[in-house]
Image 1 (cartoon, rainbow over the protein chains, first blue to last red):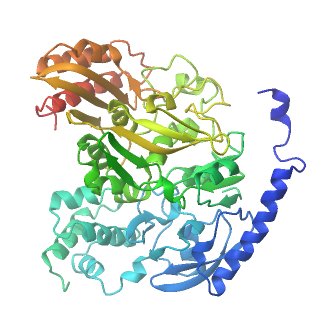
Image 2 (cartoon, one colour; image 1 turned 60 degrees about the vertical axis):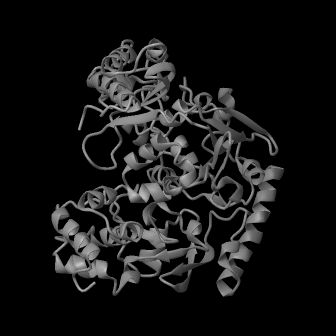
Image 3 (cartoon, rainbow over the protein chains, first blue to last red; image 1 turned 120 degrees about the horizontal axis):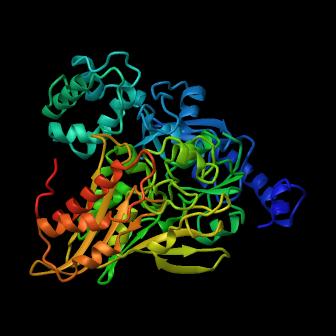
Length: 204
Length: 329
């Protein structure tokens, strides 16, 4: 590769390819817009969208919610700042804390590393959607939090873990929750809370 | 995060067609566990992100008498749960070692193989080679390479699946650079050590992508992985080894050993593997193979300790292959 090519601004001028992509973007933006008003939002199809805002519909806690996002908007940002579902926390940028854990089609993911556009057509469940679940009740009963900032991520991760391992042992629970970090160090009480749910205790 | 355009094609060729022919101008998005964090830190700043998550042909696991084929977009937990992977317990163990529910259910196999190095110079914007390796040589190199580090690249390959997949003789199917192009190659050829900042840590071109991983039938089931970690948690291992042996009455007929986390690519320790052939695999030969494996290590100023960890990884992986307890915790 020659240096001169390196100095040139990468996107100077027009090419036929760019032009075709650009017109595709406009068409796709319309398609997603229609998704909001009724059609299936999963049709957010193969054309290029962005970098500007597009309208999408998301299925969150069983409800259909519409949002306006840029391609770079994360699922966590939409949940917190557009839907006011502030349970999932922006603790780590790369998802390493587990603080932004939500369920996507029933599986635990870090909402901070999922683009909102990637969640279109899928089922999102946040800690707010676990109202009445035995897991948060067991956290309360066992004092499974101190500052509480990591708690929503833990609660969702525990729910996902128990869905897969309903009769887990303490060792399995400890291994299974490795993706979540509590800086206060309330692990002992958290593990106790999970053991309670396994045993069917704590009103659950 | 820099603003970018986004596409979510349904077929492989469409993804290839969308990709730009300059590294960094476009990026492939799978699980997002690595790429999204890198984009937030502006370490990578693509103008276009191409998601592979709606390409159905890249999902799922199929098996026939010759082996299994895994779509690159298949999530790691799907491999853990699949009975088709029961013949590859070492692969399942490598995934279990990742030890985070979120990473297991969000990461894809292809993304795991393609994740960028954890090198903190790279992750903090000093470039993949960090000033042709000078920052690493003079700086904090305790987690850097002890093999393959004579050139400017001093980072370690981040993949925790690649060593075991390579030990099992995995091949990958790659599409691009033009729509309709496809090639199959050993996974070993996928990784290479970059010589300058215009190269990446793989041999692919910017408009190529992995679509499938193929594992040959493994009737002997004599493969094992061992990772040395800083205690429990999803943090990256300090050293790892994957060993695969064909055994007859305890005697090694063929062996492949790959180290992870010690070189800019998964590191093939051929000398140790060759030495084992014809010998009975036991505690003594496992230990000696470990010593041969690290005999040519070239540690940097602060990572000589990794030589010991790599040696132990090989020894313990081989002990597991032989059906002995690994000798550690």
